[in-house]
Length: 464
Image 1 (tube, rainbow, N blue to C red):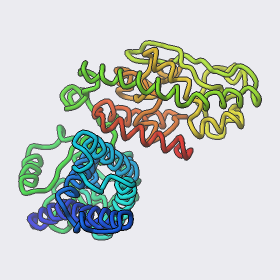
Image 2: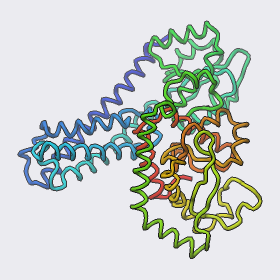
Image 3: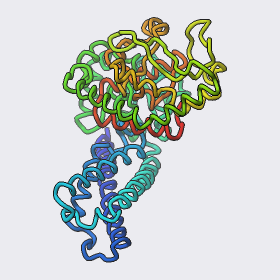
């Protein structure tokens, strides 16, 4: 089996990406800061290409680029896109540099701060990072056009194949099935059965192996996979692949053992983290309420003149630990919209008014929920609260649906920015997978990323 060549390809690919991105960032920082300083100040006396002062600024930049996973194209945060993550990193670099200058004095960084040099340079570094990463990622995709992932399947993998295709259109997906079992070859390439593992690895360049259900594999196949992994090839459980590369958890491929023992879920059993999150919620709700007061008044008048009263819409939702509460939103539908009972909001729903459709597009109807955050019914970020009328049926049909109620629901969240509104059971499944990923992988960086993505949705009306 020609495994060393596969291993060396993978190692070279990941190391090359890191080194190339680091070199491009360093080149951009040096050129941009020096040129900007020359244009603004008029000389290069203090900025001869690379000085220790510029190294400090570059160090802050590299730190935040690293924290935002900008040195890899294979990260759950990559689902947010380079634009949002690089923007967060650059803003944090500017804040940290400014605080450092304030504490230690302007001479600490020199001319890189005054007269707008820092701000204009960081904006250009942001644009440089976006362009360089886009070009490098495009080149890598072309180089990996014939590289494939190998799936050790044991049952229907249709949903996974569809998810994989939507995310990795440029890569092959090869499938090995159990003996005497076949697949729909229109979805993926049937490479053979489990017995053909060595041959397939020899004949193809494989990025990694995805195992559908390792608990059901014969011992001999597990031994072979262990030897393959020791030689350097990446091997993932299906649930781990979803988490690492697709930023969600596959609810139909999980089991109680995995949930009981998997790492993460700090949002559930970390009292200090929960208290900190609560303080941040209160602070954001208060600041947002003050800053957005003119918007709240404008929306109120718009609804009053176009739809009449009532202005607000109150609805029972299910919150943390299954506790019901009353959510407050701006009204977007005609009066009596649910006289026939609760129902999902469909695309182009006739019950939504023209004003309501505009409010929903920019998520302005959600603003009164800041009151729910202050009361403690909701968090600023978390799973979207669902209506009790739908929950009983969803819990019966969708595995582990009740897990989304172990935390406070949110005005926005990972599922909202990645998927949008849910108007069917299929949508509810997709959103649950994102919600479970957030609950398992909660972090301050992830919350910041969600907030930036939400701001983009509000400003540009993108998303569903």
